[in-house]
Image 1 (cartoon, helix red, strand yellow):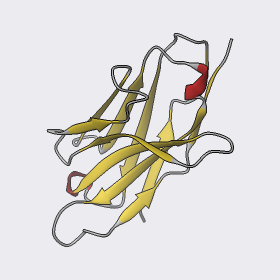
Image 2 (tube, one colour; image 1 turned 180 degrees about the vertical axis):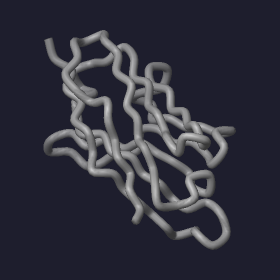
Image 3 (tube, rainbow, N blue to C red; image 1 turned 120 degrees about the vertical axis):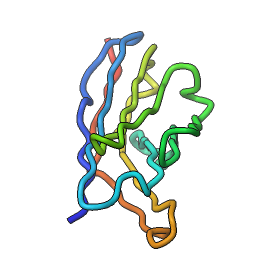
Image 4 (cartoon, rainbow, N blue to C red; image 1 turned 45 degrees about the horizontal axis):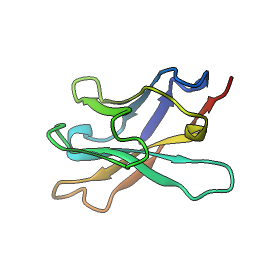
Length: 121
């Protein structure tokens, strides 16, 4: 059974930091590119950070570049999102996504249940 379980969300003051984790199970983690998305109330879900299968390549949305860092630990089947210098506009539900990147699993697309991040004083 495929599972992506996010954790680490919560309430933080502007300028603060949070580290999100996404623990994966039920599939070969190292065969999947991992991404973080977020969705704010009334807005579409947006891609904010992505990392390749072994972490050699990362990409960020302009809105988070320089403040967020995505990383992964394939030994722990976990992807992380370090969020620094948080702003109120970063408030959203954050989702973990796994997308098959190797032969045999291309087309696979899995989502976590989301974790709420609220940036407010």
